[in-house]
Structure formats: structure tokens, C-alpha cells
Length: 203
Image 1 (tube, rainbow, N blue to C red):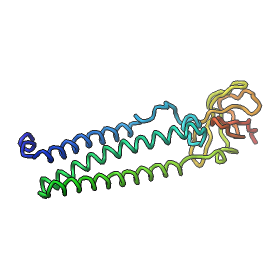
Image 2: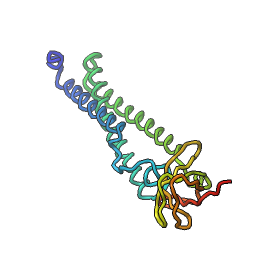
Image 3: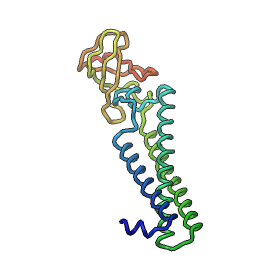
Image 4: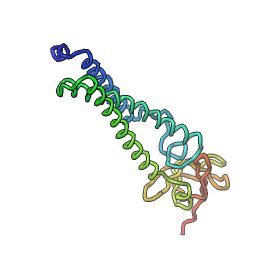
């Protein structure tokens, strides 16, 4: 490895540095995103505030959008540096292309990497958007109390939405008390994502 580095000229060492630095950052940021390191909200999947898929407060949506684009921008920058270094080094070392050609090729490769990454990330965001629920889909659904709903307070219910069982924060329609296991029906969804439910009489 030392001999390889010593054989490089100054420009090729710059390319190598960009490739190593950008590659490490790109891998680390990708792993960090995969393990959920970019999610600082600390919520579960239990309602709008818990990322249940409802489109709720504008502030929450704006924060999520800002976080997504911050991640995309930083990831694009690392991808550009990585591809600039890799392609530039390959053109200079392996293909023996002149310095201006290697720099130009590396730059174009970096731009292409940004475009590809941006296209992929937008596709992922579109799929996530398509998979979200809107309030109209949950209203009228049947479910059951998961955690006791105290008088005038909030508990948890489980309801089947679009074929999948989900957990939501909920309150009773008349502020009554509902016990775990009682069947309920969703009446409405508040802006904060909390469901309003009513006791469903057994037929």
C-alpha cells in the first residue's frame, strides 16, 4: 500500500484522498441512516405524533422534510467527493489521461452520482408518501382498547387500517372510561393524531 501511494503524483494523491475520505463518510452516513440515527423524535408507531402515517401538524411535516433534505444534501456531497476521487484516480493512474481530463472526468462522475442519489432518494420518499394514511382511512374502522382510556383522558387502541393492525392514541367520544379489550369504532381524528372512539355494541 505504501509503494502504491509513493508511486502516485500530487494530483493522484488528491484523488485518492477524496476517494477514501468521501467513501468513508458515505458509508458511515448510510449505516447511520439505516439504523435510525437520523430520527431524533424518539416516537413509536402510535399515532400522528408517533409517525403513524397521518399528515398532521405543519411543523412536524416541515421538520421531517428539512431533515430529509439535509440528509440528501450531505449524502450528495460525500457521494460527489467519493466519485470525484475514484474516477479521477482511475483516469489518471490507469488510463494515463492528462490532469485536466482526469479532473473533468472526476467532476462529471461526481455530478452524475449526485443525480443518481437524488433520483433514488426521491423515489424512496415517494414510496413512503404513498404508504402513509390519511384520516379518512381510519374513520369508521373498528378496533379494540389496548390500554385503558380513563375518563376524559387518553389511552391506546388497536385498529385495522388497510389490512394492517396499528396502535393509536385515543380518547372516548363522551369522555367516558373504556377498559382494555372493549370493542370500539373510530369517530374522528384530531389534528394532533389522537383518535376519538366510541364504544361499539356487540351485535
